[in-house]
Picture 1 (cartoon, helix red, strand yellow):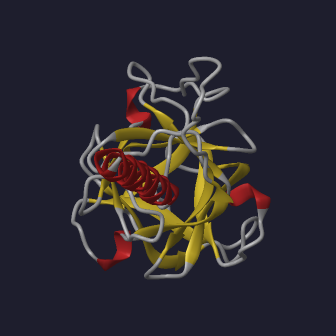
Picture 2 (cartoon, helix red, strand yellow; picture 1 turned 30 degrees about the vertical axis):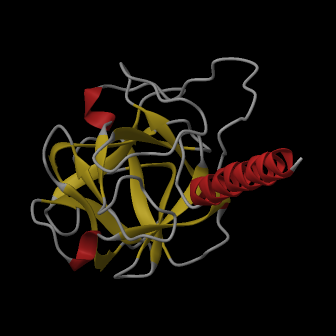
Length: 217
């Protein structure tokens, strides 16, 4: 009987440890930015959120403009995190540091994009929104630069453009009409305080415990 009692205590302890480990892992998952999440990105140096709208640049590429805005509750500042065109990521999967992603504007379905055009105000590299219904080209891919294994929600990160090696940046230049007061967003060749970003408001998808289908983005 004593052996049975000891065995029973051992099994209960093992079950408790397994449950605790699962809860700890779940809590850790909730701290990550995940594939498919819809969020706002804050430039921490200039306190503006990454923003876009169906307003084209009057120079350079003529593509849809991307700016920074101080207003926190503008719906045009929501972006979805997606995998690369040839390597989609599983919905709810934590984004790894160094992983290539697409950042897709929710309202217009165009991807954060850059290319060798000069930005209109600072003469850095123009950043635009490009494509249709989430599909553009290979210049839509950005690598998440962070310190650990995964992109943490409260962590400051950089986005380095895979095709041209520039960092998504804001240096404070302001537009006039028709987007008066909005800040220029551009690509810079050097890593500095102007290219730190943090995830803010949004819907962060969690990994499904019992996936009913294979959702890829």
